[in-house]
Image (cartoon, rainbow, N blue to C red):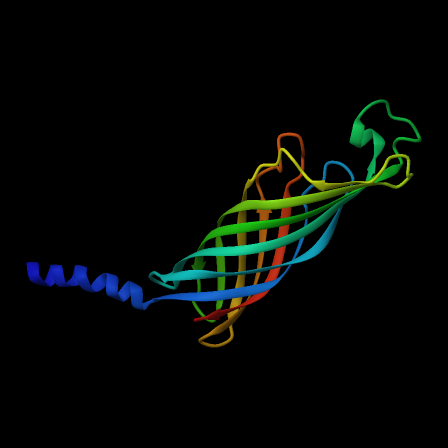
Amino acid sequence: MKKVFLMALLINPIISIAQSSFSVKAGAQTTGIANAQIGDNQNRFGFYIGGFYNLQMKNGFSFQPELIYSYEQFNNVNISTIEYFGGIENSENTQPRFDEYYKMNLIKLPFLLKYQPTKFYVELGPQIAYLISIKGKIEDKFNKLPTKEGKLEAINNLQFSIAFGGGYQLNEKLDVSLRADLGLTKFSEYTYIKNFNISAGVSYKL
């Protein structure tokens, strides 16, 4: 009986390895501001590329950690002077005046629980993103202040979000997916901005 138990312990990791797989993925995405507190959100397009490891469990469930490079852009437009600087409200400074533009490079690490009872699947989990770089530009619509552009300082390099989505397995190698992630972390202690991201792409099993 002990020998049977020991053999089962030895075989179990082999089965797990046989049911695991590596895949690469790429796609397009759009990024914006969730619940913009000042100004208006304006989504812009970007792209992502990366890969993931899928570890099969029981009853259609699997664990899927991913490593993704993501290029994202978004705008915060029609910001009034009173919103941007604060102060006393009047007819002039409540008019839309400033537009802000952002470009980001990130490394993302989603840790997803995937459920696939058929060719369709759903997935959900936390995501950590490391901000490699971010550039911003501020434009004054009234041309009373010079345009400011360059690298932004005092930014939280670690961003946390919740990722969820689903997809369809086209064949043994290829599937298509749609995913959203909602930011939980502000860029810095001095800003209100949190992002949401919607992506669509394909993955190929190696």
